[in-house]
Length: 428
Ligand code: GTP
Ligand code: MG
Image: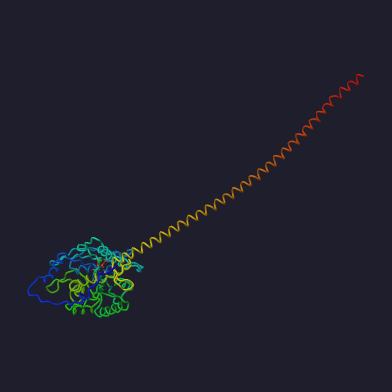
């Protein structure tokens, strides 16, 4: 395929900046984008990965200041499965289609080797669904329910020691597919000094195992300061509670204990506010964008490369989708012909083999027939011989019988003549 020639003059042409003499109107473009986006609404999908009972549902309820449906998971499940639930939320005039995906049974199996797989599969399936929609002839991406996971909240048990191997393996498997924000769950169960050391330990373990967690972006000047400060606070130590407690003359969310209370939104008690600010206020759009531009892009690239599509040919020249399609089609036809020829050859060989087998069988049958014929002939000759001998025996027997009868006749005759002669002698 040939590409249209590029006019070198046009290519080198400098773009000039011109002053407008008056108001034209295109400065309303960003407002149009905002109002269009607002009228369409937004999607945000959160994946909660953490062992049973670690506080996933409580934290999500606390984050969104509402009560979502949640069933307590059993500790006796054979494997991990994912449970997505979608809700429509509204804040001011902004509609949010929120999907919360829970990992049910995570960390409960004796053998946890495969625990990460259902999570990876779920994330890939959402990417695949989006890719399929994108590749349709008649796409409807504007009203497509985008279920790709924008953030994975990874709940770390507050052991104060280190990460578990299951945590490291799972985060390692997920880090190229999703933005991971690790959180230390039930942080009220860990002392201040222990928490500090625990955070350092977790971060160093993540680094030494090459696990890439989501970093709040620092490129945009408006958020550089806050995001870089917050990056230093990772992983956030969080507390969840839906209980309201009166502190002074205000009702606040807290957990009550016999010795006192821990306030969820008090920044000296835990990092809950930091998490909510970073996740839902400052970086929600970056999380959505990173999901599309980084994680989905990687999935799409690998998938298309797997299917044989590429952007450049072996000489690093641009290679269009059409060319790839035609090359693939040619390769396919050549392969098809080769397969056809192979099958034809196989068929001919099979026929030849069968023919040879049949001939061999025929020869064997013929030989057997000849052998039987010879046997039959010999038997017949033997029988003839026997019959001849029997006939001869019969003849000699008959001859002897006749001779014996003759002798007997003569003997009888001579016996009957002798008394008559004696009578005659007596009369004399
Ligand atoms: P499954 O959905 O069954 O896996 O559990 P989950 O991870 O959703 O945990 P859930 O939020 O249901 O909380 C389990 C228990 O932990 C409940 O008794 C909560 O009150 C308690 N809990 C939740 N968050 C915290 C916390 O921050 N600190 C403490 N101490 N307990 C908490
Ligand atoms: Mg739950």
